Amino acid sequence: MIKLKKYWVCCAVLFLVLGLFGCASTANKAFQTDESQVQLRSIQTRAFDTSDKEKMMRTVISTMQDLDFIIEKADLTLGSVTGTKFTNNMVVTMTVTVRPRGEKQLLVRANAQYGIKSVEDPETYQDFFNALGKSIFLTAQKVD
Image (cartoon, rainbow, N blue to C red; front, side):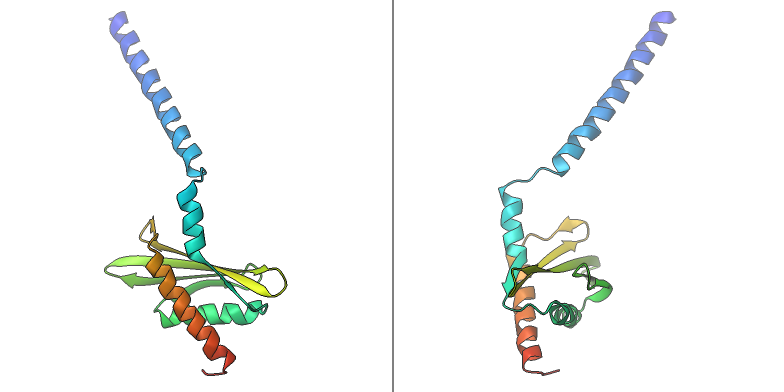
């Protein structure tokens, strides 16, 4: 009876230790970067020759709305816009950040998620930046 009790205690301790170490290694990997993440960041980012952050933010919001996103959050101070849309019974969430690059440029980075998975397809981001470029042109020409 005592051997059986020791066996169950040892099993419980073993499962507890394995559970704790299993979680720790996953958490460590969550913050590791590799070359593919750097490449994804370059796909998600474009520089624009303007320093008017407020106008760029308004243009980003308009572009996202043109692409059927519902704007959930927008913060001029942080330079962040988040919107969602529904496609094929899934939620697509996009967050766009606008930040200065020097005195004459703004960097715009779009980050999309399809469900809970990050969108890594370059074409998705190219389509967004093409639409944003057209919106910037129309805004400069004062076309509504």
